[in-house]
Image (cartoon, rainbow, N blue to C red):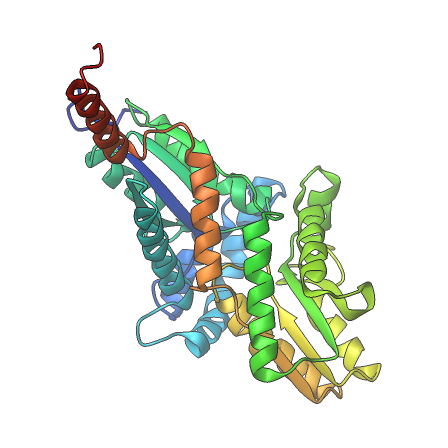
Length: 363
């Protein structure tokens, strides 16, 4: 593979650092054609679907991409905004707010956002950062819990870009932050604020995105990390085990996925006499199709039709100030040792030298 054309290296160039905040992705429009392009890229990733390649491609192109795009497009249309995809809007806003908070804390870093699938791609953002002279990049996934299907796939995209790059920047990768105190505190603050404004249900359901069960047996840590997040959030909210339940949503295909499944659980709770339920999605940093349509529309309807009387969806962290502060602190921890405070440190050093000279101190 030939290397891409790169900017000429300049000797003595000051190091520049950037954070690339990465989310999963979204179609460019709520149309069958746009959804088909998006699904073709997403579902072609061998990290996402781990079955024999040839068999899967036959299923994907022969069945799924013929019938699923129109159905999915209608779902996207139901949550689309005048400004575009909610996932893209929230991801872009989070990156801008993270940049602002870090600058206020004295960190001389650039923050950009990218999507693993669709636009804006990770490769295009890395190209742009490199053209600007950035030579240190911290990869910050929007996924708190690690999974090979998400986090590792994101890193694959970086490695693929690096394979065609002659002068590769220095990279750091944040693998997980499912038990980060700031993240847990932000989740708890979000739930408590919702309860204060809307009242509290009889049970809190914490719904995480599902993955095939076989990934757990193959060594993926996702299942355990979801449960740890849930336990820490419950502790922060003062809930005992009878007051909350962990479930998994967004099942694809007929294989067994992590259980219990969210919608069947909600139906069973309603049929068992539970009248009021609150639901939060701790693994999603931004509201998107899976939260706004699958949970707040489909799951809500299923619970109410099964006999429930009140369903409250608690929005994702989105632009919650505690969440942005948690991302900033997490970023600073992983930036440690890089000269991100160079301008301030240089000014301080020069001031110290000047003071020493004025006092007649030896040089």
